[in-house]
Image (cartoon, one colour):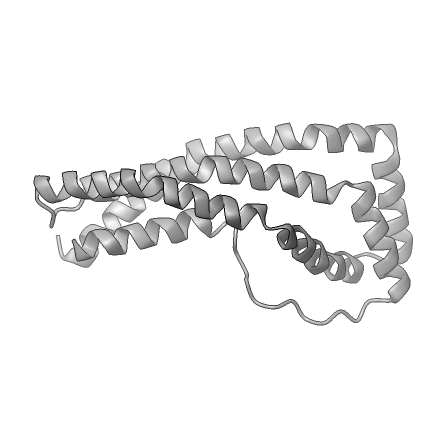
Length: 186
């Protein structure tokens, strides 16, 4: 059972890692205040908050399935567990999913999350692009093709996430199974 808990924790970390990669504080910006202001304007033109909100909703909806699939695989493939222990662990997993979903919703529905994300993004753009480049990007995103790109981005992100899951999850599950077996010594 101890190994299944390690597998469960590992699965949650692997599934959550892309959504929460780099939690370290961002370095203080040394960007020109005019570039920072232009960046804030560009991000508003890009509707970054709306795009992130849609992305968070998609992640929130997909994560329970990903976690369930990963943990189910880890439990079923745990050579140290008896069939009864596996069955009990699967029942506990199923019983725990509503609470996990509730907690995930709380995480992604936190209004401060978008504020913090935008706050962290501004210095990255402002230090990467010049004022002129930010203005050019803002003009692009304000243009009809830029607006079309922004409007289509949620669909593209959703389809890209589906592709990522389809391609990545079997590999992650195989990796987790092999890792668990090598840690156990089999």
